[in-house]
Length: 163
Image (cartoon, rainbow, N blue to C red; front, side):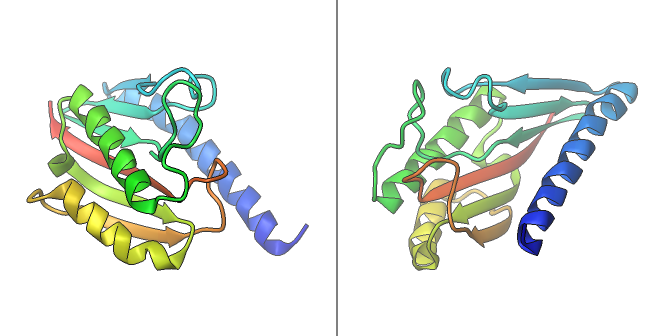
């Protein structure tokens, strides 16, 4: 096992341990904590599409959204970065709307692309998705692969809205 693989495993285990602690500490402070699956049945037993923490404000932690079809998870728009990016942002907007939020409530975005040459197209897609809304803090990562073969982009967001 090489050092980067060891680091990846340690990071995943550390994040899992932290995630296990968060709900109980939030609940002890009177915050509500809910997990939701919004986009079909294929992801239901794998991960939550969103985790919502309610207190004086509501924080929405959205899982990475890509071009997965909602019923079986196959990738839509194969080879078309812009359409995959638009689809991902459309899913984000739907998820936020279900929670009474909008793209303007996003405070943090993390985007993953599989090729550095997609960065200009991602910038255009992001500008289109946000329109006149204020931009969030943003991290962009170029990765070798995403969760499904054929995925070119995945975006996760954190949004905060007043309760």
